[in-house]
Image 1: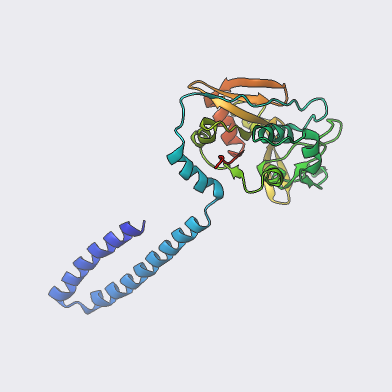
Image 2: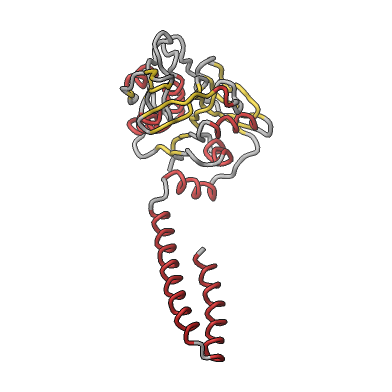
Length: 276
């Protein structure tokens, strides 16, 4: 962006200087000087902003760029990661159970029940007022009852899971949230499974599956089909994953549909860093 602006300024400056010299246009001269000052300020602002963005870049982005150069993305992968069922103890505990599988893959013996106890909980209670649902934001903690379907609840998103994982692998967790599905293949190609949020259909859901919640963060769209699994591999047609709900190892789904489901749920993913 900066280089483009410099080139444009140089071209405009040459043209205007020519007009000033040839026709001695005082007004053009004043306009030129004012415009040049504004453009210089724009360049300085843009340059500083870019430097700030680089300095404040997420750990996941930096790591991914480095790993692109070090890890060759394979055409197909299938990791032998341990599978842990969430049932019967944790009907809504797919997220912490998938985390348990991820930590086991990293060599950390973390019990799903211990993780269920330690994960940050959201204190909000479900209320219906004027036909609107008021509840908590799963980005800020686990919503509702994890141990039973008899009382209200939903689940939790990646931020509290990432925070909990850091307690077991300090400085080694990698937040892949917001990156492309293709970038998830980097750790997978290196033998590291990836924790994700998707839905139980493993496809992009219609709008009818979602409802609006009014939370402390504002309005958010929630689906009761929210789910978490541990991706263990992929090939040209399928993605493979350990499913805590069924207890099935290397379960498969259409990779195209799975990707759309993942993106619809906010492209949430975490893994652990490569061993040095």
